[in-house]
Length: 358
Ligand code: AHM
Ligand code: MG
Image (tube, rainbow, N blue to C red; front, side, top):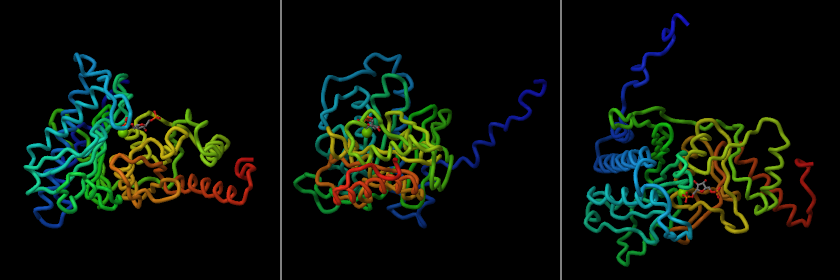
């Protein structure tokens, strides 16, 4: 090993041209309009929240009161973690003085949070999951955040947020933050999917990859197989199919953002179908499934409830759940074909196993 280091790529070459997130967002618009400036400012605020949360997560095990449960239960009936509350409050505080976002709606708040002083200027609503996969927090594994920006429709005088109950095509900007070995921010404004890595020494998100494309097929299937007993027969048949065919490998981290990120880069499928306990699955449409569906489609992939395009679903309530099958086009279609097969056989009263599983 006499030439140690000679074959290493110099560190500076990885910085490329140092395109920062805010510069990249502005480049997505053809001119320097008010909208371009607003969206760029909003994305910078999301980035600030991500930096604050990164800092907290990186030292959480050394701080008193950062880990564990609060003892409260949220609107979904799930136990709340201290980190969920911290991250939710970070989003509130970075947007409170922004003058840009008029409402915030999150997994941790039953009703939207109104910032009336911002409303005359910025009629935007940010929907978000402040800590996605929070069961990973206490054991120092990856977690994430998911966000979606929508334009407020109408005045919302009675403050019910009913105008948020629209399909996923109404999303203006979507993305997620993955808190892993490095902090990664992935976003789309409807012109491709782009990823940025936080350089802690600069405190900036630097462009890592532009126009990411999901492979049309990948080896990974990502699902909580502990729910096998709770699934519809069609999903069980699909899982038996991948068990019996070469070329599949299972990956499931318990944090959707991390599992989706793997599939975005390497292909495959993530699924959270309905279960006996939750017939519509576990994931929430407005701030989990719909933003990721937007990203998947922008990257040439597909997102389905199993029977319908996720982006077409119109929710009836803000915290509505929906089944999710997302990732490579071929793999999502394969899952859908098992569901269609089963539905057809059921309607014909044919109960035996499909030919593909024999
Ligand atoms: P959370 O946002 O409350 O953490 O819930 C969402 C998470 C996803 O990140 C993950 O894919 C899923 O719940 C895991 O659920 P399960 O433990 O049922 O497999
Ligand atoms: Mg979540």
